[in-house]
Image (cartoon, each protein chain N blue to C red):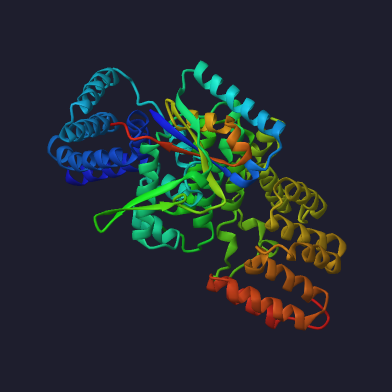
Length: 115
Length: 413
């Protein structure tokens, strides 16, 4: 079964971090990704560019309405994701708990519909 | 024959419902599907057992019937991908036919119901429904919510169990410490829902307190090595031992301090003491063991004719340190007052008053009123009793508080 780990965090705090601390976070993510790959859990994953780069699209009256900005203007923004393969929720939650993002923000775990 | 079949269905339902649901769901992960299949199976049993007599092993008969229903349902959903599922179930049915008894997966089901990913408010209702077979309307009335709202929450929780694939397993040692307390809390809440309600009769024949005790016994039978499990069972037994002593012959409320120990059920107290002793030997203290030990100190009054308040004070100190619970802090203040007098008790209560949770908690105001009364501050005591009376739901306790308030004198009680 596949689970999506959605990593939410405070963007402005993230961006105002000193360089070396940023390096440590990157290192932690790299180690985490490698651990998931070795365990055969990792399907894919990537960090996202800041929400300032986000654009939302919705169709209103048959026309595409394009707006600058993320879906919700909140302090905590989606900053990255992992797609993992795990036998059950407990395993997925254990991996989510090891994610560096769980220490700075929150990791939402969502089961993926099997199509 | 007709009556016999009905009685046999009823007995099997009471005894085996949770076991059958647990067995079915442990394989499919689908609680709602298992409930539907099992209720169909019970309906079929009622007809078949009337016509053909009661089978030798009613539990196994029902399980086979429920599995057939389940396979039918999966077949009817009929996608190619789902075709593998009935085959696996059929293969399993053949192997299960050789099993002498149905494996007991109820413990795993309890851990699913009280899984951290399940809304805490729905954990106890889920246990009532899946393990004890209570219907949604009965559960809703026990938890003072509308049947529609309760059934919606139950449906959502079951959909999550299946959709997110919450595993049916008993957590192992390192994890058990975190995962067990929600199970204990949910079982204690079943008991508490009945205990708090003197009329406690969820349906004509079942009381929630009795079902909570039954669940605590079941958990102790399944996890006999866990001291907190034994602590919970002891705590529930101590409370149950005083069930009838809480009311006098005219139905009036009798507080613990005024209860006649000869009205307590000694067999239940003895059983509680045995479990508590067994728990304490394991050397891992916890909330339920401490609360049971406090009840044990109260119960000792039946032999010593006096309450060991210093021991109770000490136990509440531990409990407050361990849980930070304002309820424990209020009870600790009462113990302090018994030893050091009402003034010290009141200052201990003042320390809790800052907690926003206590202002709407009846026992806080009742304790405060009693201590103010003993200190001779009648006006303040009456004001505190008014708060307590306004917060109390049970009319019997309310009239007890009114009497206490009316009986206040300047000399102190």
